[in-house]
Amino acid sequence: MSAGKPIDKNIPVLIVDDFSTMRKIVKNSLKALGFNNVSEAVDGKEALEKLQNGEFKFVISDWNMPNMMGIDLLKAVRSDERLKALPFLMVTAEGKKENILEAAKAGVSNYIVKPFTVDSLQEKIQMILGK
Amino acid sequence: MRADFINPFIAAAKNVLATMANTTAEAGKPGLKTDRCTWGDVTGVIGLCSPGTSGSMLLSFSKGAILSVVNQMLGEEHDSINEEVADAVGELTNMITGAAKNGLIEKGYKIDMAIPIIIQGKNVQITQIANGPILTVPFTIPGGCFVVEANLVDHK
Image 1 (cartoon, rainbow over the protein chains, first blue to last red):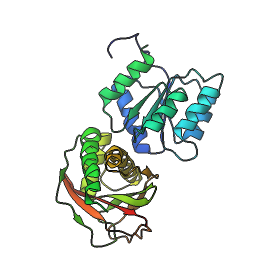
Image 2 (image 1 turned 120 degrees about the horizontal axis):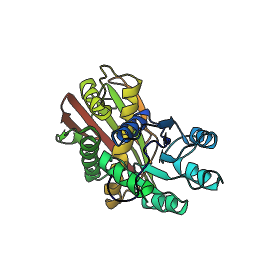
Image 3 (image 1 turned 30 degrees about the vertical axis):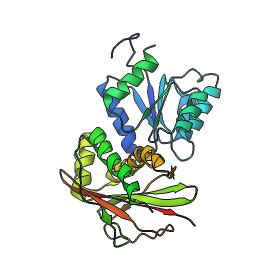
Image 4 (image 1 turned 135 degrees about the vertical axis):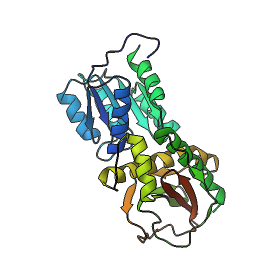
């Protein structure tokens, strides 16, 4: 990864997506970038429980999920005193302007639109964790 | 219904497969679907809705095609349409529809999309409430073929 402070790639990362395919793709991409301490959750509800009970340092979450959407997970994280500063990357299939604005207002660290390459993911991670 | 609404789906299908599965998809000639059944061995279906308009998009793969795509996407060797492969079809349906949205907005269709469902098996009858003509576009990729089928019906 290029400019910015060195990134600790041993940090525990939580991937949140209702599709196992996408969780695997993100996990494989993170592995290619040197991140091997990766856990998964199938929706926002499970993710919030894991975040509240764990020591995660980075969340990568899909937007559109049953039980609890990514935007609602983000709002819950930012409302939690222990979690509110957690770096949070939102993944969206739509790139809808209203969604991006809502996520920005809710305090998202950054967003990435599907489909994306490993290089694009790396850039986003650098922008979030490398500052 | 204007036929050019299919173009954003064609572009999106090519882009998603190229980006996520390193796969070049060659589009064939669009046509009108003549039945109401699934075309391929596994099909993703997603509802589309906007004020005054509703419809759906179907992404249907032959077995050879989807196994080729999934093996590329995940770096794994699958030899049958199992739960993981079906899940991948759902995610591809989601991504292609999402990627098509901006093109649809430019054509005046500000659609919202549902969470996809996946159907396994050829010739499964599908009954759509938005019962309008369905455009179908065949694609060829290494390993086989798939089709993108879509309709958008204006409500009176």
